[in-house]
Length: 376
Image (cartoon, rainbow, N blue to C red; front, side, top):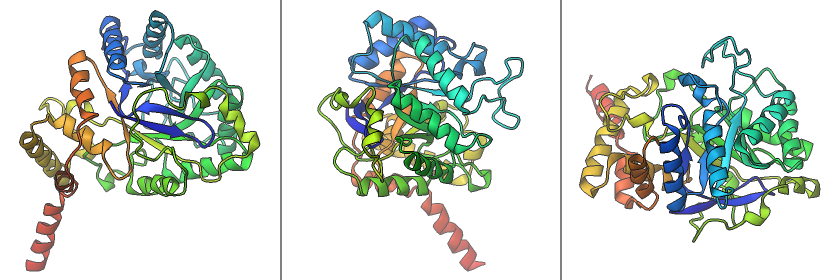
């Protein structure tokens, strides 16, 4: 397992470069299997676990099923130890009688000060802990003023309830605006952003703003270039978990002594394997991903995997982990066997020529298209 440091400028800690996603723990993945996965992940040196307060609603649960399973696991092992835990709020049901939707009206709770304060404390109760290492706003809330949301997360950090605040499913300009607002308020800004990201990419025509973009990676890289050692955007493969833990709970109060004017930012990526779409015929890519360039990328992914003797999913994860701007993939796991395959990706380093080939897989199509236009 490899490790890296994440930071918001005043609070820093080390996490594994693979993050365990627990979306369906306690629902599609039964409790016994979920606990076995968590045990194996920790035994393998995994130290970053991701959940949310609403996940199981999508499959008929009450919302916090995965938080409850994690709470049981934490109690069984007598605490988190070196494990760093992230959860999310803001996308649970506002009206319990109505369904959740990803299109308007979403029925999301949003990120008002009241919701942030209440839901953070409820997550702590369900998890059975008194401090969240990372707390994300699960969705961007454009109805609540950014200043209100930023202040609410800042208050949780000042109280020592949250180490690093983050945001997910957000347009880049909104992320930058929120970070600038935090600096104006003198509180620690979002230090982590979680977006969709994988080896394939959405069609521009889909108009998605909740995926990792070239512009986001460039922004993160610019922050790393101006930061000191241990910046969140640096690669930082560590020798073991737990380093930097002294900057944990309550360190957000350090904002009073002056907030870093260019605080680092870490990118975490959900759906890095698209629920098995790279290897299973019964799991097609999402509609925005179904275009000619991605078909070519998947073909090359399989060719490379066969040539280097690694499963396609491992190659796809290694591609994310080894990019010019490192990204932490949040890998949803439903069996120990799946986990074993993902764990091996943490130590798989792609040769430069292999990476160049993967990066440019779809450029052949662009060249053919240009040639066709020139001949027409």
